[in-house]
Image (cartoon, rainbow, N blue to C red; front, top):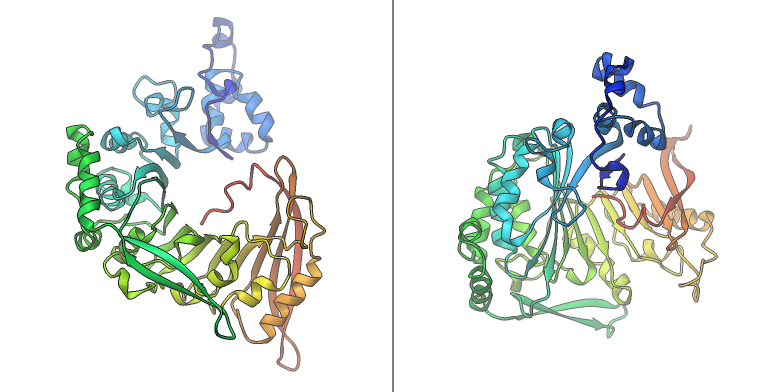
Length: 444
């Protein structure tokens, strides 16, 4: 199923004619749960055709056609008002389980308050593009505001997908030095103090002054690093929460760390998506102490800059020692064994996803990809050394714009032979995935 996007066929259905209303409608006489069961046997196109028959058929098929909705203020997109009292989507608001929301800077508070329209949401994704320096206050304000909504404790997954508007400066600047004096290349990261906190504070106050009194109150005064960590510890997280994810496409991803620290529920799984240039992550309180060790992060999605790929990978093990899932979109090596040679041993790593190894000189044309046998041999070499002992699933993909991409999945299982020796077996499956479907990769 898909997220609801307002397409021509998904606009408000026309009212039924008198003849339609007076005719027997057998489906409408059935219990709605039975209607859902019947509609589940239709394919995607058939459900769409059925939804055009009448208002009743549109509402009845909504639940089996869409698993969620994305709210936006853009023209011709679905907005919160469509689900409010008297809105044409009001009858289906209780069916919404998955919700994606675009936050607008000048309507932050009202945007979040309005989410109470949906009483049964269990998966919430919040999108925003914000100025650098607003991350701390926005994190605290958003979670505090959400905690007042009736569905908050029912949330099982929360994802923050935030991008920065470009502003110079920050708490720290990183300078990457490639040191090859020793036999093994190492990545050294030196830390220089960027603009002082007072400059961050000044920028924050300047932008805040242009917002409405309501938004000023919502965001509050600028939170310094120590104040932010304290506020994060005092936040109330949902009772049923099982996943907390951050997709961070900004210069500094460290503001997520105090939230991971503040959520002290052991059943919550933490995931983070960062650009490789953001590694290593520094704790906002003590950036000068070097990389923070974050054992609570189980899922990492890392977009590695090609020029530093091997060096960046070697430092994942220190920062994320308990990692279980690793996704590397765009990591395309020229050797089927390169990834496994550069990746540090992660004893809890179960799943890996990366791009298909390609041969040199074949970057912009469909490559003669490495056979799965070569990849399997490289994985087996590593496993025979006693590394990656928890590994059980590998996914490699090759996606080309405007074409279908071949995706291969490998499940690794272990059997104990008569002599007590463990024998590994590899089961490969192949399927096609369109470039559009894989543009965002897999969710954390």
